[in-house]
Length: 251
Image 1 (cartoon, rainbow, N blue to C red):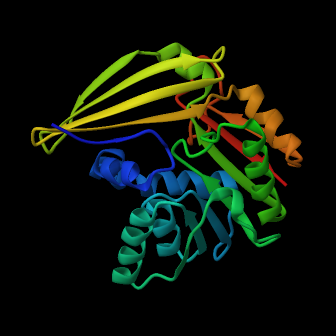
Image 2: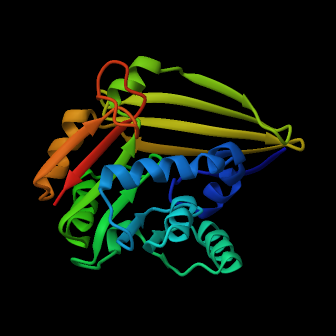
């Protein structure tokens, strides 16, 4: 039985259906270690202001707030924000959660740092929209502020590419991701299929692939004075052994 089909990566139903599999407990448990690394790379003083841009369920936002940072978090998926707000309320944390399209956010010279984690960049059809978002992030930072963007770099995707990947989830469901490279390695289209309780959900996600040089050039075009490329949050070089493409940009 086919329960539903979504063809847009901006459809909240799609993201909310996949929430348990995008954010399993193992990933959530690893969040404090990621925030430790982010604080070091961003060189954040205690009490600094942090923008979590496309925050998802707010796992980084919550951990920053637990450590005393002043946090603003935006996302366009209401269900994710509802979960994040509920957790913040339960813990007595003050976080400014904003339901917002990334292209519409505006808060100039407001933050010491901004993060865009877990492949949350490059989903718009027009590359000019990516530059617009990068400029919004630049403008949101105070002078000297830093941005971290975490992506699967084009070089890494090419090295590890598989057309089909099956996964069995802890709840007994199955997930299938079918990937197709198009436009000369400019984009990857991913068809996500979830089989659970005899029903099938599916949707297509498409995002732009950036090489290290391409994301560095984009961020400099947005106004950033310096961009450092790393192969993971621990600070490894962005080379043939890189696990992720982590861009650290300074205003």
